[in-house]
Image (cartoon, helix red, strand yellow):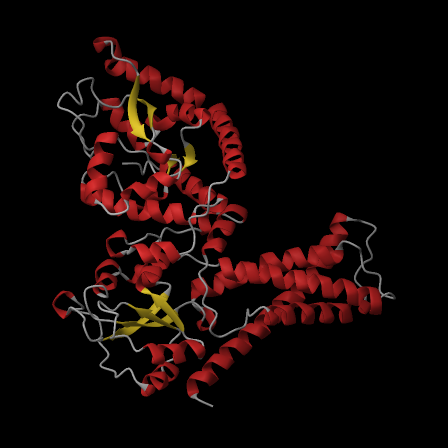
Length: 494
């Protein structure tokens, strides 16, 4: 047996043993949880030891059946970040935490459903003589789901059992491959993977290519498969500048059949950075890529109902701050100039339709006497009180009215002004696609990137906006709202 296979088997065996012990302990604790919920529940007796062993076996076998102990399982974990942020604690989230866990959580839930069915059938057939509380199996399964998810999350975060990082190689050393070198220089950018090196491909633009990363001078032939096996490579990222006639298709096909993941550069960057590289994107990738779920009528109605309820709840809590903000603006310069405390501005919404957005005025009355201008971090047009309310996002609160009107959602790309949209549509590829979703008070781009003050900044924000448009979901919205609360409370707005 090759050394790499031996190491994999050892790690997987350790994982199975560790989770078996965890599941057995959770099954044991579930007995006492049921007793706390129902005082007349039967207490633990010696007869329960055999059912505990059987239930643990069922759960482990179910997880094995759905591939949770597969050595090549390296699915992205976005779902767990959202679920843990919502259900466990916001403190568990970090801005550089890789998109982790949707596949693992799905598999865990499917495995527990299978185990639940098997446990109920087995209990009815073979454990009729054991006093088992009717709620015990359900409590046991629910506790197991939570504990298994947290256990997998923890070992990945800590790098335990070798499950944290995916070992990857990059096919290409040219201009496209250099994006990884330039955009993912820090160790924090590479928490989710271990980069073994870059492999040259004919046709690469080496002048604009890799400069400092390790280059592996390996022939991509039949011996390449041995290299993949010997170095325990989990994933091959294709980043060649020229694909037609240069990629070793047959070798990659064999590697894929042996379980090695083959990933396009755009998909890899999307997964690891949380943005879509618009400057590298081609229409065919966008057409065949997943996501961009349709906005049907039922979903639009449910989204508006949810936003209406959320806006009502927020307004209930923030109306005193809105009154104080209005008073502060009036005392700052409103009573001298007679200017309104509110500011209405035309923005571009969903489908390219214009609407009026409302904000508390944070700039002087003659801020745009020379026409529309980009907002910047230290904008001289901002008033004394305006700097404070912009920092804590208090100037955005009147946009609750836009949410009630249905022009905006709580979460979505920030709406831009028509003058800038016209310019950006000409200079940035796919810019108009951000208008396929309703604009929002808070957005993924606002969490990841500061105020845009140029076309270059708009390009960077567009990458995050398209990522949101592709992956929008209720759980992602909750995550963005949670992070936005952090921005507001700690004054991280810019």
